[in-house]
Length: 136
Length: 291
Image 1 (spheres, rainbow over the protein chains, first blue to last red):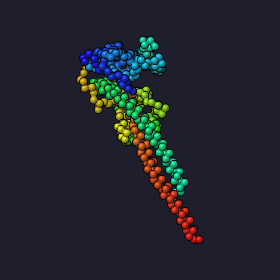
Image 2: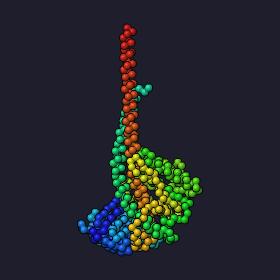
Image 3: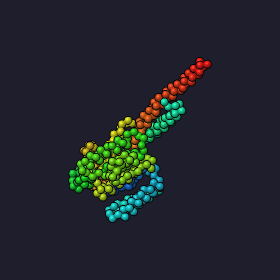
Image 4: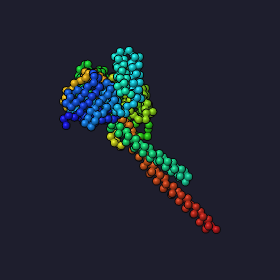
């Protein structure tokens, strides 16, 4: 089957998915990207966002918060810090994540390192955008 | 010779001890299965993570621009030992084996004239090391309130360790935990986490040249702190499985010993009961003969 590739999604606590996929859309650090079979070998970090997997059996979506993806021609693995199937995500999940991001933003503001503040602000914005996007 | 009443009490008390150890053994067996499952579930992440890191480290590692977490601070004067043990006892040699390894390491480092600092995770290890190296403690992480170990627990510990590293408190960090092999065998292990070493890990052998988004250095700088958390997390999980395994076999032994003791005491009890009866009979017979 040349038009599918092995897709693995693992988090530190468990392995969430391991299947043959035709295309995977992922929130890369420098922008969203879609990986299909025979994609150039790439390693990218992820920002919080939605990961869409399209497989012959149907597509699925996951909420990921950071981590990285390793793409080879014949397969890809996503190592997410936290990954939740979208069907299981509730508003309270998201609220927790937003609260966490906000707390780290506040903590960063107390410090004097501007780059950390910016990072935290970006994280917070990403989280909030995610909520709107998922229309929860 | 203890009298009958004493023996009876003794047998009762050993019996209730056996009940407790038996129950603990069964609880440990149930918990072991869960701990083992989560340890296994975390393995794919750790393996892939390390493979990617090994590849990255190999390509960036040599240069001077490599992050401190990989390159080290340039000296190895101050060592931080992160000793991870259980919160509870009654698990055979589990806690003391880890503590022994950590103590030996601390002794060795001190003999070489290095400065040693100790961060303990888990109460039992702290108690075991306190007498010899209590003055070296710099912190303690209490996990006794944690019902189920999650990645966030490891992240918290990693955050603590990293902030100490950034503050220049130490040069080299080593974690101590017990690797789970099977129920009867757990190997106390020391693993250096800062600076990260990937020498014994197979890199990605696909030979592919990767595009990096963003740059190689940025990814490495982002991933190294996560590597610390990942190493601590797998150490904690291995520890969890080891603890339950060690407790299970320790309680199995205790239950068996209690059983043997009950048998021995019961024989002793029956003998003395018979001796008492024989004694009474002799007294009655000789009394009757005297008339």
